[in-house]
Image (cartoon, rainbow over all chains, first blue to last red; front, top):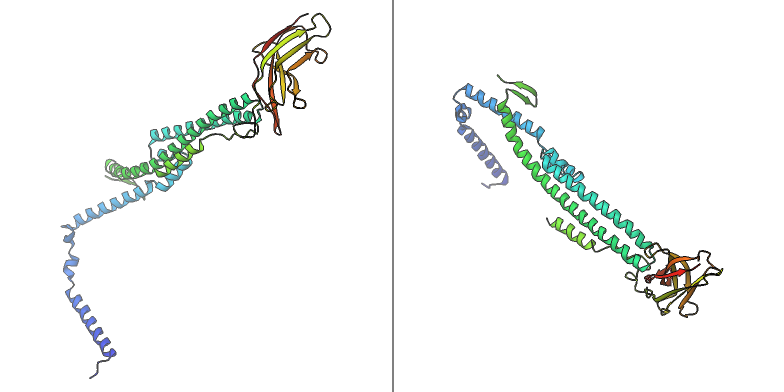
Length: 198
Length: 143
């Protein structure tokens, strides 16, 4: 008898069906339905476990509500240095960064203005001593202005680096804080509303 | 960190200085010749007691290569503000070495104490570049 592809397919189908039947007969239904495998001895323990799970889920939802976005804080600090640090409650650091940035920018503007005033006089000067004198008078504040601008750029760059670190720290501490708050007070704020525990 | 370093290096390079864009600045334009200093200035008053008083200024004439003319300044005090009383021009490349500040042309030439200074200038399309002012010289015009 010649074995054709058709016969081979039929044989494979029979083998597959047999293996499925064998697998079903080997499935341990008792083990599957045994509730003690999770360590629960009775329904009370199961209920307590369930309560704990629900509680953790609530805390997770709270965490997601209160956690700060790194990207959002980064943008905040890019626009106004220290803003992101204010959001993460690092108020002293935020105040120092904002103050330094303001001093750097205002100083830079002040010296630049002084430099440009002297530079305009230099441009219209026709006397050799005035030309040399006003160029020097313009050059010095111009360099101060650039130094202040450079300082401002360094503070701004540090502020961007710091806001990422601060936000990550804030989010890491937030979970501990939520756990502490939850265990401390009988009145809980949950995503679903207020919850009073007796 | 690499970005911060890039910004700092860029700023340092940019901090080289302001542009020397005054067309009369010899440090920004190699074609500009700085006028020579005026030296040997002396002043003498004449015509006291007459209607026409005048002051004769003399100095060592500069080389026409670096001087096209002179500004004559006068003040009432050594450290006071000096005002230009006249502008002199080298004619035909001949160096000027004297000037008469006369009451005929300037009614402000009256009895009193005055200080005179001179400076040379060189003419360029952008204007006259003026050299350093000479040391002030004193003159008293009598009544």
